[in-house]
Image 1 (tube, helix red, strand yellow):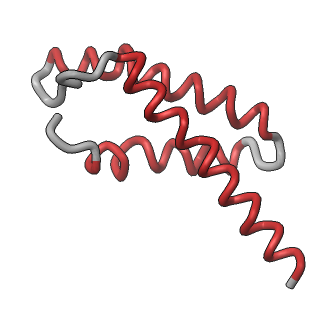
Image 2 (cartoon, helix red, strand yellow):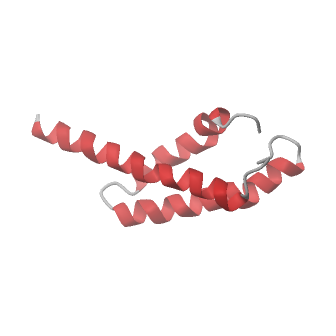
Amino acid sequence: MKHVFPFAVGPYMPMSMWLLKLSYGNFIKFLLLNAIGNFLFAFPGMQFLKKINIAKLGRLSAIQFFLYLFHKAFFLYGIQYLLEKKKQTE
């Protein structure tokens, strides 16, 4: 995998949006669901994609890829929280 953009827009973004909607208002639930989804994508998901010659991580380990995906959950939830707070004050 030369670029991460296809995966950021492809399976990762819809999963994150769906999890955000599913766990609306519950930060711990969102983090837990996101960790499970990212784990499944980073470990068995990437092994499967490597096996069928679609993508490989190159110099990244699976745990580094997981952490890369998971850290974005905090930004996503924070931005959504701020947008909801702004919407409520208007």
